[in-house]
Image (cartoon, rainbow, N blue to C red; front, top):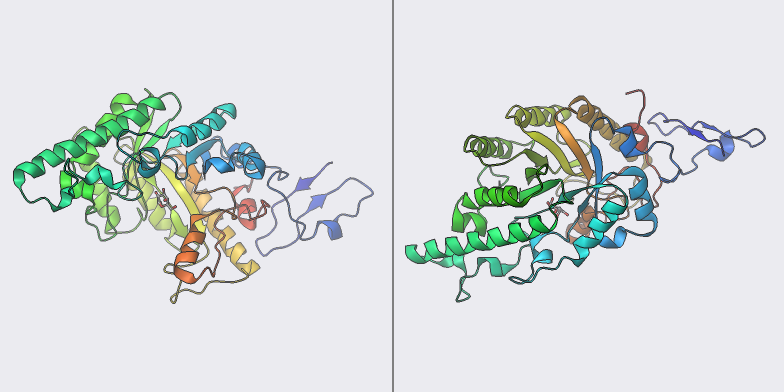
Length: 385
Ligand code: GLA
């Protein structure tokens, strides 16, 4: 069937659809949902000249509709959870690769790139990493000699963790989030057990180990959220600059981009990308979602039982500005990954459960919960931009 779909105006006007002669067009077309599988322009094709378009997935999403949408619109994947320390090495020396292997298999079959997320993090990490040989918490140790021993043991564990994973996926993974969220919102280095026990050595050792075992063309990233917000941005910048000056093998900064319709500003995002590019580093957008809500959701920000159409238009306007910026900076950004595929699966809804009695389901992506395209999709595939 000949079907030409054009980007509607953001106010929600009907799609212009050309149907074969004999079929009535306007009335049939008006407000008719368009499946992500039928939408003419594939996201990864649209941005092929600029950067990869990725999605975070669970292995369960490698079949059915998710899989079809992934194949059509994305050319890069990252594991939403299964590569995190608690999943991949729940007990010391017991690595569980089966789930990650499924994602690697799917990516290979469909000629997609892979990001590795995440080697070292303070969250979703099993406690055994931070216990000494007697089972005591290393952070509580006061004896300087024992603290030194603990530090060595923890760095050894870190090395084994990084080496085992990176070696296994050496020929599959092209970018690694080596460390995640090492700076706190208050502008201090995060006071995690990693930091309390090793200082900043864990960051250096993680990069050096990843570099030793990663594929020759693989790129190594430091990944964080709110990278556009001072004082966190400034601290991250100073840390990264120091790593570069010390010859630590870091290739770039991963900006998670868990953002909101009105925040942060496009100007701050642009400034951030340019700051890190000026250090000679690449940038990747690693966990993009554009929440309809502010944070925390209650009581400061209202949420909706039924999201008004006007909010999807506002979201589209923001996506439009964002992707125009990414495209403008495409020599400084090599990959843009969404933290999900469609609105039916997003960590933001776990947040709604946790903080808001389940009220206020979010809808942060360009495909809706039924895998139909949203105004944000039309906004970012705008071929005139
Ligand atoms: C952070 C982590 C991700 C994920 C999100 C929420 O951004 O880097 O792995 O856990 O939080 O899902």
